[in-house]
Length: 138
Image (cartoon, rainbow, N blue to C red; front, side, top):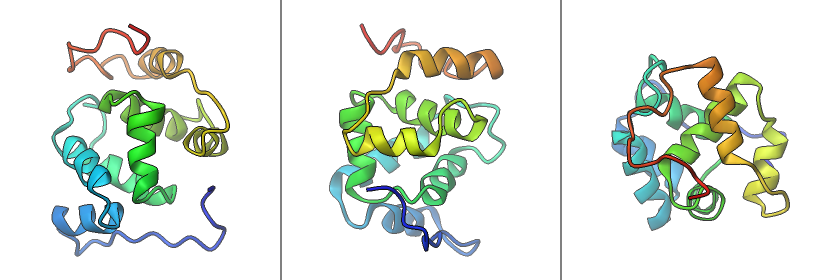
């Protein structure tokens, strides 16, 4: 379901990473797993906030709990680079928030490979850290 109009971000400046994970995951074990992966992800070296940037993007777009797990497992084929790619693509205007939500809601396919290439065109260092991922369609 798309983010409600009255959505209010949950992360504050006082939060620890553990608090952030608990707020984002809503106790969903799959979402906790994804957040743990995001915490150690280094695929976006141009993000000056490091892993916090991905957490803030999830919060800004109202992606919590099972929606985080669906994004990772179903949309991105369990590849954390896919999650980071989609979040960065929305931030860069290469994909709309609505398109992202449509794919989370399983109503709209999304070309994660194509988005990765577009993001890398804007940010050449993006996704170069994870050498185990050469393509999402492989």
